[in-house]
Length: 124
Image (cartoon, rainbow, N blue to C red; front, top):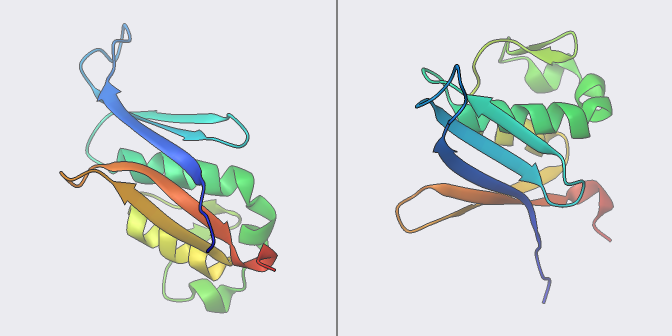
């Protein structure tokens, strides 16, 4: 039986910052690299923002090498960067096209607690 290890942990809270006090905040931590990605604000998916930042930083080479055919139905990714707001579901779809299997971990209320990440390119 294959065991999975949580790769990305997610924590939602309220900012206590001087200029952002009271704003919603999402922090995504890469358990392997210990790198943290934080988004503060509203009007867009904070989780999608931090997931996108992680994906862009961790798998930049794969994103650049994606052919236009694989992203042809979307204008969200051009010249190596994502344009505008993108949902977490769309980011997971893009990750799948890169050979990643992303499985979310949620609590009973439906809040995302983290993501399991499996690299299909490295599965033996």
